[in-house]
Image (cartoon, rainbow, N blue to C red; front, side, top):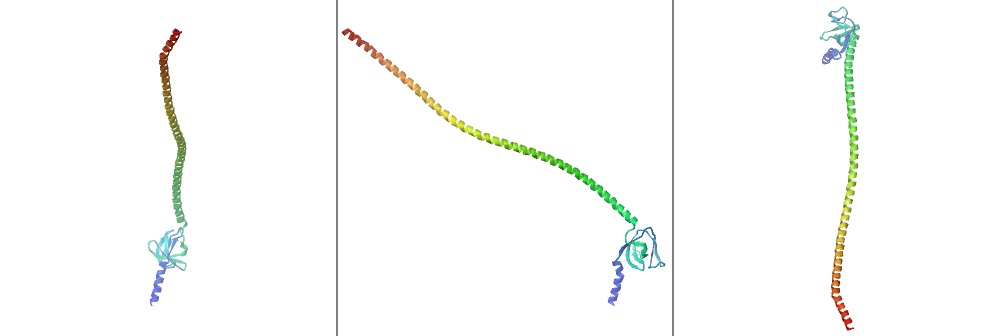
Length: 220
């Protein structure tokens, strides 16, 4: 008994579990009937073309469906299709095309903006490259100036050393010159003293010699 009840329950639920979607075909007002027969009670006299329906099951050329409002009934299979009707598909495709066109326009705008930004970046890159070249040239000039300054410093140091050596030589020569001058003065002073001494000596000797000569002449 339990298995029978379970089977009946599954049969009752299975149409809803495996429901599919169906659409009213082009340009029709289709009656919805209570049972699958052309003479059975009509539940709805005019389902509109393109109406989206929930397909439950099929039997003997009829389809058991449910409307968006929740009404269930039977429609002949010839009046329903698995895809939306051409008019609805065209409208949907048109909307999709409009959306894609709008998206394409936005993308074109974005591309234009990106191209403008790219041009600006190229300009900035060119400016940066020029600045980099200028800085490189300045750095090269600084290196040359630094090398020249270093050479000048070395040369200046050498000149200072040579100047010091020359100054030392000048000091030595000056000292020697002073010594020579002092020695020369001393020599002249000595010569003068000798001359004075000789003059004094001669002034003493010569008169005596004259006297002696006179004495000899008188004795003769």
